[in-house]
Length: 178
Image (tube, rainbow, N blue to C red; front, top):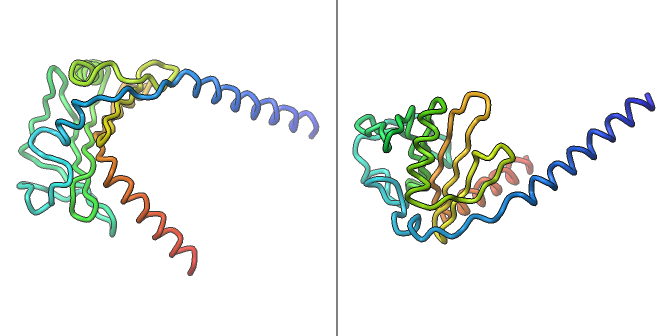
């Protein structure tokens, strides 16, 4: 039992130190004015109402969030082929666009397009693939699965994301009052 406790304590310390080392490697994302200038993805601007977006097919709906796709969307970005493009809405307003790729070739081709548009971004993982870009109004994240090299890219409107998080917190507190 004592050996097990020591092993668990050693593991916990190693995880904490590894997390601290990882946190030190992550620089804050440089400000990218180009993100704010675009303020959206392709023809859609953040805060666009769902009623103004033609061809939406609802994929997931909750009381606070709606996720939809557009069948007519091109699945090409530069040399990358996208597996999926999701548009997320909060209170009927576009707040996030998610791009998903499959495989190393598509993921790295997409990352190269992002870097050419917004700069290198801030490295956020020890593996060296995950990156963040920040504007004053928009956040961009690139996350790559190290095993399969599938990537998820998110363009997020900071203002609406904050409002959504506050609403989620209120709902969670209200449900805990039951």
